[in-house]
Amino acid sequence: MESPPPIAPLPSEVTTPDGFHSGFVALIGRPNVGKSTLLNQLVGQKVAITSPVAQTTRNRLRAILTTATAQLVLLDTPGIHKPHHLLGQRLVQSARGAIGEVDLVLLLVDASQPAGRGDAFIVELLRQARAPVHVALNKSDCMAAEQAEALIASYRALMPEWPLHLCSALSGEGCPDLVSALGAELPPGPHLYPPDAVSDQPEQLLLAELIREQVLHHTREEVPHSVAVRIERIVEDDTGKAPRTAVLATVLVERSSQKGILIGKGGQMLRTIGQGARLQMQKVFDGPVYLELFVKVVPGWRSHPGRLAELGYRGD
Image (cartoon, rainbow, N blue to C red; front, top):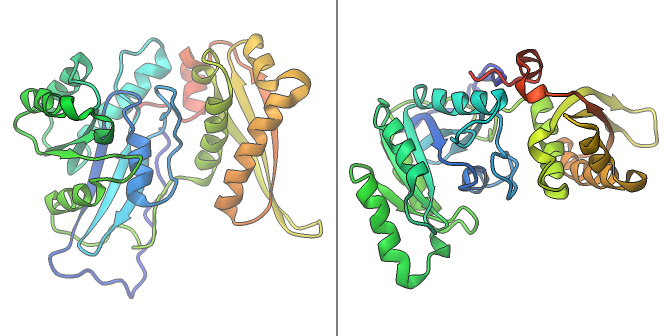
């Protein structure tokens, strides 16, 4: 993944209270258990894209959550799964790499289903890590009352040594208690980022992800995993009646049939994708955005080391 930019210097007026804790927390779990949704819920705004499609997260981004007593730098990681191509291998490598780089691991599981083999694989992986582990039983609001006790028991049996926290990434239920527990587990330390920071994600990566999110939402199942987005240019345009930001981006696919699906009849699908992404970008820039999208066929890009490196998928 692309390396984050250097940490911005803290304003001189920022002071760290006594007993303050700070550190890095990796969100680990199987694909589609709600890691990105939980990240957005904890931070209080959108910093990671979400969709019902598995393996939505490709980039290991950092979100920053600051409370009165702690600063948590949260790493959203790709879901750990059995890879089927080089891109998948690098995504899993990225997630596994995060485990060894943090002060604390938060394992997120889907509590509406009993613990399974995928969870057991990740548990064994985490038992080899040096960092302490907490477990968030996400989607606890989806547990049927008559099954709740048995579902929780299946996770206690699988990982009896780690604290379990019931929460809902969607509603926020249980999240304040989860944040308090994580903050207390971090080592004593100062602010690592300014208290009002919520992410250190590079601007180009954020814009590319906003476009890819719209592709995930609007295209059929065969397309999303074969799509990558490259931001070609960002220009501040003040030649018109009102200043606006112009963004030029290329959407990469692997086959001509996928290009046809993305463009749609008369270009309608690409317009829909562009309109949705532009609305999200206007929140980023706090002003008007002109977005121009192109679609390019690059056969087999997910299995080509050079293409993956060019797009920032290095697995580190």
